[in-house]
Image 1 (cartoon, helix red, strand yellow):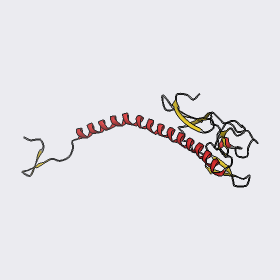
Image 2 (cartoon, one colour; image 1 turned 135 degrees about the vertical axis):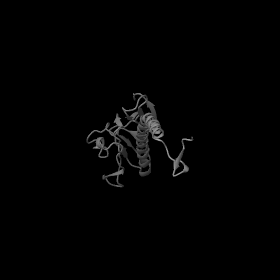
Image 3 (spheres, rainbow, N blue to C red; image 1 turned 180 degrees about the vertical axis):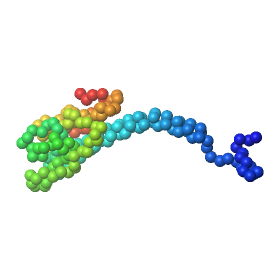
Image 4 (tube, rainbow, N blue to C red; image 1 turned 120 degrees about the vertical axis):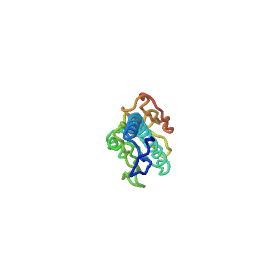
Amino acid sequence: MNRNLVSLRGRQTRQQGFSLIELMITTVVAAVLLAVAIPSFRNIILANELTTTTNEWVTAVNLARSEAIKRSAAVVVCGAGGNQSGSSELSDGCASNLGEVRAFQAGTTTVTVVRAALEIPDSVSLAQTQSLRFGSTGIGRLPSGTAPYTGIVADISSADLAGENHRCIRVISGTTVTTDSDTVCN
């Protein structure tokens, strides 16, 4: 007799639905797939947070440079390094506002925030951040310096990622911003 047929008062009807064993097998397969996929998905999220933070920092540096040229005045992008108290009203207190872009209001010594500080995800850490002051020519210097800056502007990393988990942002000759991935920024 066909197992899929059930007799109800002498009539035969086809049984519909899934058996308990079929549901259990489907659940086990889904659980195995999730166990494999979730760690990979976490790595994708971490890599995206790292890339986003890097892009935001590069945008802040480029915005500071373009604002300095546009305003024909000094503009600072804030980092933890290069801040010498009293060296510039623009860079005072920069260490607590990483990535913030500041400029003087036209014809005054009042500081205005052109772009707010970066919001750094908990999974991302910043090191070796440098404040840069851009003059009307668009050349970046340390806030207390006179020579065009060449060096690391920020080392952005995530300890939760394996391999090349550092994004190194550099400025060359005070004008060109470059980024690269590495296991450590030197």
